[in-house]
Image (cartoon, rainbow, N blue to C red; front, side, top):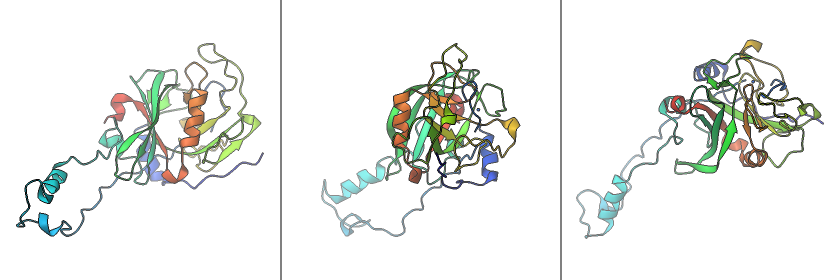
Length: 276
């Protein structure tokens, strides 16, 4: 089965190093880093006064007429430009062009269970829930902002989602999808649960990997000591080595929802850290 190539990396290595400051898979997982994301920019104000003549300063307006409507609009709060629960520091790593964000939050630094929600930004600039929330598992020992291979923690940060694959056929995703028998896995997890089928579908998280390649690719731009192979894959009922899991139906739903044109990212970590 040929491997489908994805889009080029969104960001430079310099930006990746910055995102790693915010910051891989189920037991015996194949290894497959990170291209975190850029910062948002405020839209410039419109030039001139485009209001109708009847509502410009100095013009008369009847009670309940255009003047009242204009005042109501002026006092209405602007849409929150940030993803719910995500603070300004974390949000600064979300690229300006991103309109899909898969947010995974754990209660504490050491928690191996978490919740995930897919958010989308509409044309008005407001982020709303598109799918979820779903229960998830992450690494056995929780989260870390400085992931290293074998620490059994999931990297914290904002990372691009651009490539997918699995042992089973493409369920209808718009991401490049590599179906390959090498995604087969056996053995048991940390809770003694069977791992078979965990890689039937996977989404590569761009942590210490080369974007645009199959999730099976093992090149590690920042060195093997920084880990890799951090995926979103099928939940097997227990914690992972570094990955994030979703129940099979939820993962298939996420795969069908993600759109490369919307520059999707994953934002993941403990709730308190992501709120910064």
